[in-house]
Image (cartoon, rainbow, N blue to C red):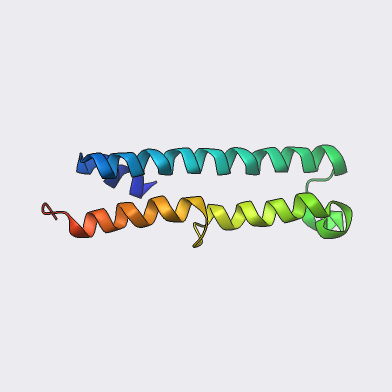
Length: 98
């Protein structure tokens, strides 16, 4: 979220657009993770992971999506959050103000 504030504070078109991209990316990834958490609870009716006995066995597709979205939330390269953060970061480095 700090990258969003820095992008908005720079007040240039490129960094403002990348800050908006970061907001959209973060919102969609977070919403998808909350959706998966809710549907996993509806399916299994268990809250604690140690009681589930492994999500891979009982709900493998949801576990795969949860793993991919968790990596996207960490902004690993190749994911949507990484692109926005990288461009905002490069914009900070190349800015004349800083």
